[in-house]
Image (cartoon, rainbow, N blue to C red; front, side, top):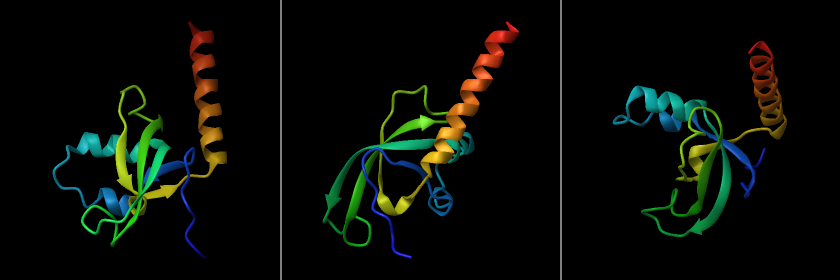
Length: 109
């Protein structure tokens, strides 16, 4: 099966093997990064060996969409090799679940 191209508007999460390589981040920060689903807000082609992935690739600007980092005003940049696509149906289900939880919380108040 061939690789899928990543486009603006796609949902992604950081690959576990990518996050496991990090040694200097606080464990709580890594946990938040693992649990966050990002939306791709910008892409650009990189042709520089040093900054690209294996001699080139796509650089992505990612904004938290669902998860613990949503409340922060942050955008992170990552190479396409460090992320995996998330099925939009999964994102829809998560959004429906969080909306139902919020409605239940309001009803209990």
